[in-house]
Image 1 (cartoon, rainbow, N blue to C red):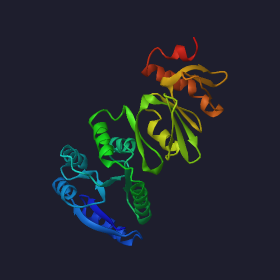
Image 2 (cartoon, rainbow, N blue to C red):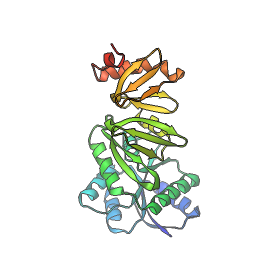
Image 3 (cartoon, rainbow, N blue to C red):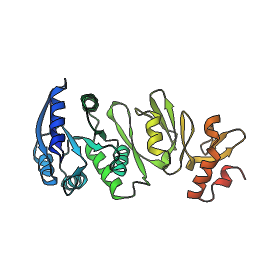
Image 4 (spheres, rainbow, N blue to C red):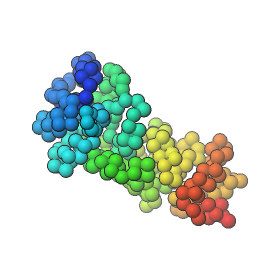
Amino acid sequence: MNIRIGIVEDNIDNINTLKYILDQVDIPVTITGEAQTKEEAYTLLKERRIDLVFLDIQLRKGTIFEVLEKLYEERVKLPETIFVTAHGSFENALNAIRFACIDFVTKPIDKETIDMALNRYLQKRESSHGDIQKQVNFLLNLLSHDIQNPKSIAINLPKGILDFIDLEEIVYIQADENMSKVKLVNNKTLRSVKHLGYYIELLYGHREFIQISKSLLVNTVHLKQYNHREKSLILKNGETLIASHRFSRNLKKQLLEAQQRKPGLLGKWLGK
């Protein structure tokens, strides 16, 4: 099936590069419109029939987020979205995009990058479970608050299903081959298609998440006691996790840092 594509980018050279690459891909695509300004982007997304849009974050006199907020408020149905950003720019926005589980590519783009992005889109479309409206709303809420201290995250489940989870509900995240198991406080386990490294990059250093081994990322909110000699962590749900020798070296220091963020917990953790 032909994919109707829109391009929002304030640099004409970048538009031409993306159009050239899209002309080379094996997947049938049709470029139905392009925009370089916020006003043009608003019209394109509101009036054209588009399946997938590539959105540059920085536009002339503003960002694409201002356009998305206006469209969302008007309840305009948005197409599936792939953000395009330069390496090292808009780090906070990029973190919010990751938390919302929306796809993105980093400039400079090439055919391989676009091929992979289009295939991810097709997989999501085939599942029929995507909800870009909900993801964009989640993203805009993150950007309007403190992205340095997010309260929730979108978990990408098999078949394109997304589950929006409060971070405090996550007990730990465990590697499961090239996927992850997300253990929740209600004893439910979600199987995420994202590998553990994805969550380590996203959550490590955020709030109270610490890595205790190559395969485990733990939320210390749910830690009941830590035995440094045995390298064991007893959780409030009764489970015991063992830190690896490598990660246990810095574990006490990390717990002290978490204690500074939430005074009163360390003594309890150490059984004092």
